[in-house]
Length: 388
Ligand code: NZQ
Ligand code: ZN
Image 1 (tube, rainbow, N blue to C red):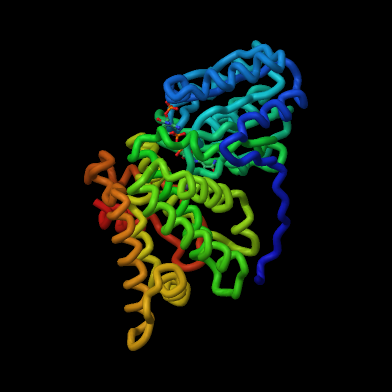
Image 2: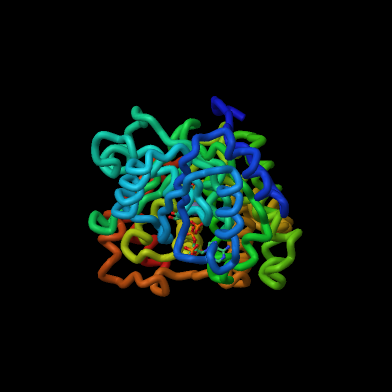
C-alpha cells in the first residue's frame, strides 16, 4: 500500500427493514423546516412518501417540497430547488429516492447560499464550498451510485452538453442515510440491473490502477465476488431480500471512499459515460456498460498484470498453460458474458448515439490522468467507435 491517504466518513447509516423508524432519532437534531426532495412519483406509488410524511408530521416539522427531480438532475432544476430552499429557510434537506435525488439534495445544499452561479463555481470551475451548507439526509430507494454515503453530486447541463460530478468534502456528505433493501423491490428491472453495473464499475474504476500490493484491491475483489453472486440471484428473483440487501451494502462500500484508500483510481469509463449522458440523457449505469468492454480491452495491454489478477481472483480463470494476455482476455470475456446475462446495454447505438455524434461526445469527455493508459481525444473516439 504505497499511497498516502486520510480516511473519515461522517455519514451515519441505518440499514434494514425497520430502518425508516430511525428518522425519529435523526429529525430532532435539526430545525423545524424540512425540504423534501423526491423524483417523478415512484415514492407516491409504493407508499414510501406517505410513511415519510407521517414521521415528519409526528416530529412537528414544517415541510416544503421539490418533487420531480429527474434522473440525471439538471442545472435548471437545481436553480429551482435553491429558490425553494431559500424562500422556506430550510434547516434540513431530506432526499427520498435514488442517486439523482441524493445528488440533487447535495447540490441544493451547497448552492442555496452560494453568491454566484453554482454551475460555474462548483461544476465548471470545481471550486471548494465557502458558503453555508444545508444539512442533507437520505432515504434511499434505488441502489447503485453510493451517493448515500459520499460527497458526490452529478449535475447535467444540457445546453453546455456537459454532465459533471463534483466530489464535495465531509461537510456535504449526508448526515444520515436510511437503507431499507425492501424499498428497492419496486424498481423496474432496467433500473435494477443498471444499478448493479454502476456498482461493478465503481469498483473496477478504482481497482484498475496502481501496481503495488494494496489491501483495497483485496477488499474490492471480495465486493465484486459478492456482487456477481447476489446479482445473479436478484436477476432471477428480484424479491430475494438476502440478495438485494447484500447488493445495497456492496453499493455503499463501493463508493464511500474506503476502497479508494491508497489508490490513484481511474474513472475514465465514468467520464466517457457521463459525456454520453450529456448528449443522450441515457440511464447512468447503461452508459457505463455500453463502453466498458471497449475501454477495458483498450487499456488491458498497459495494465496486464492487474487484468490477469482480475481474471483469476474475480472470474476464477485457470491460468495454467496460458499467456498473461490470454488469461486477461478470458477474464474480460467472462465479465462480458455476465453483463449480457444481466441484460445490460452493450453498445452506445442503443442509447441514441449516432456516428455523427462521436466527435461531440469526445469533446464532452473530461480526460483524467490515469495510470495504465492516459487517453487522448483520439483514443476516446476509438473507444466510442468500438462501442457502436
Ligand atoms: O423519479 P422516480 O419516480 O422516483 O423514479 C426513479 C427514476 O426514474 C426510479 N426509481 C428509484 N427508486 C425506485 C424507482 N422506481 C420504482 N421503485 C423505486 N424504489 O429509478 C429511476 C432512476 O433513478 P435515479 O435516482 O436517477 O438512479 P440512480 O440511483 O442510478 O442515480 C443516477 C444519478 O446519480 C449520478 C448519475 O450520474 C445520475 O445522475 N451518480 C452519482 C454518483 C455519486 N453521488 O457518487 C456516482 C455515480 O457514478 C453517478 O454518476
Ligand atoms: Zn456510477
